Image (cartoon, rainbow over all chains, first blue to last red; front, side):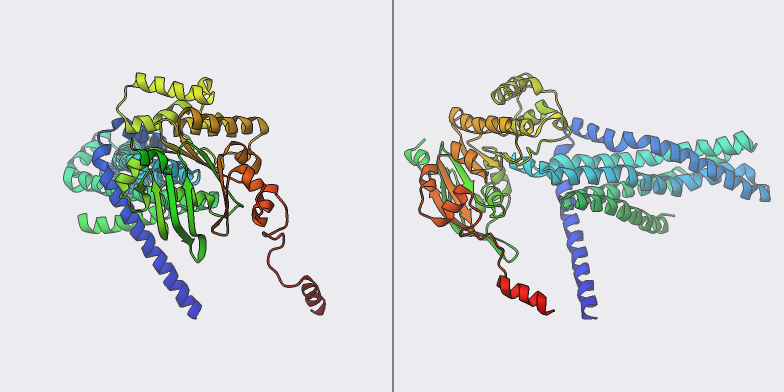
Length: 257
Length: 273
């Protein structure tokens, strides 16, 4: 019993220590942002690795999710003779919910894990130490541009996801199941609000982008510098990011909609 | 420069103590690293040789004691002052620690680009000169993954001298090298030191190589400096410990057996079970 309580206390302390370290790191990263804004080549390079290389998985997934929405939505709506509102259903589901959430989950798996592994390996091979000895702050040079790239990429990827998803819904609903094309698009245009729906979706994806990238760079930077430590950190990135996305999604939805 | 700045040691360590958890790594050591000399720090694995380099570089703070580099107290420096000092120090990590996403040229140009506003043309000239010194001018476009261990260390050496530092610290530069690249590294360390007027600290447990190039050797064991002096003096030293280490004897003050209960007793205990 005593061991159990001791263990509980220990893991509680570890958790809060890590949380503290993560916040201190975030402070350091933020402090480096102004000087990093002047170094565009570094940010563009990271935007490529973090953002552009994630586009393919986002495109394919977005299209399939849109097609499934089209199919499911049609089957439900047709019972009520309301299949012409399919466009509204597909677009609202995507823009408000599935776009930001699924894109963020994919982003955590694709880009987040890669960031953690890269930074963790840089630590394990003493590259970060070497930078410190060259009087270069590794947090500003390595972590800040990656963080910024994640922050910029995530909303764009979520927007791509939603757009492709709506096209996927159109492909199935209009192309295969015969919903009227004019109704699909005009009903969507009439019902989707720029501020209530799209902007709130964008806010969600910005929050997810910050959280996922923060978790990813922290896990990499805090990883135990061995192959086992890095592999554990990578797993933790995906697990913690996914949980954080879903938890935050609920909170944000409750606040905004 | 005043007289004192050229005659005082470049690195002065006084009464330095450092502990990791409950284990004392250093217990009140004193050390002087002379200017313009190659000083080897030797000792068995796990005596904290690498830790000592990190302490000198200010990456970790000691428990007590003082470390002065060029008259500046490292232990009390602010982060920005420490970074200023580190621009004048080069360090070679055990595996080179090259940045894996850049080629050889960019790795050497990295500290120059970060710390100066020189034109690309000037940087190219500087990097080419550094590469020529380590004999790898032809390898400038290779990626770190395409280099052998010895080549990676030579590139790291070129990077360490990129900003023309006053000293270089080498962390186990000879580990795991074939005889040819070993010879190259040994020669380079001495040549760089003498031609560039550096001060070198070589942490190593390769007695033959380290003693062949060093002016002074410090032997560390159990958190203390057990002996120091020139290689010749240590070979002829009366200290049992120095004798065991310098000659690589399996038994001596550092026992072959890990501390244990009496052998006969141990065997009998097994029989009684």
